[in-house]
Image (cartoon, rainbow over all chains, first blue to last red; front, side, top):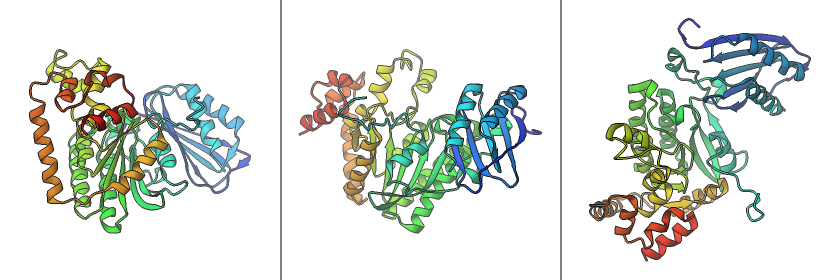
Length: 105
Length: 298
């Protein structure tokens, strides 16, 4: 965040029960106005780690609620979720996350 | 959905990656510098703009009707397909690798507003390097085929890149030009060009216009499978690049330049090039325009 004046980086981690194992990285969505891209990659451990980079600053509590909701429905373990966001609404974020989870083997 | 075209998928509405998945032989695409490698723009974050994991372009190798081809596909939804430093370097690398590995062709699924203005000179240099690499590839006897059919069209430096290729396929809703409509209006005034007049914009830059004046080789419907068939036809139709073919093309361009003198609108130009019923073209579909050109120029 030091040099990225306009961007905000947010990190969350939830412990999951659904081990994803090894899988080829999954990319869904495109970084565009009101849209986002989501990249899923395997990660050691039992956590599901989220890193969000967004151009819409100050919505940390909403991101946490949306990601927690996603993880309660898909309690993934051993997954790193990287998000590049350009002001997507919570509904769009939830749909993209569900789309990404559906692409997991 | 129509019963005659049950599997129709709009090329324009697909993302760059969906186009690759549907256009080439199933499962044949192997990507270089995939998103997980995070080869991203070093400039955007400083401007407060989120980067894309692939900098808006996917490159790699695939099979098209069993033939080995290299592929570059621009994502129009990310910064309008603008060419930044990394995006351009990926395209240059694609062509340089083609020079080394000699695939049957390089296919460029172009969708771009041209240089990504956020990256200024780095983007301009990147586009010029793409042109040079493309021409080197052609000079080495490896054909380059460009497909245009995305909602953002193909403009600016990428418009020039597209016209440097051997073979150009465009859909009726695809657009190809140098300066985009808003740019012309901003620099010359709304009296010169009204960028909100969609009919004018498509008449002047759209696929049907490009086909009628000879700027592209195939005019197709907005359908991924139709684009695939056109790309396969392009592989079969390729002609060697010779001095004679260049001179012939220059002669056609000279003739067109003179034919277009005094034309106020694209319709006037079509008429002067010998297209019958030019005024009816805007209401025709791609198939009707193909027939019209064939009959008019027979």
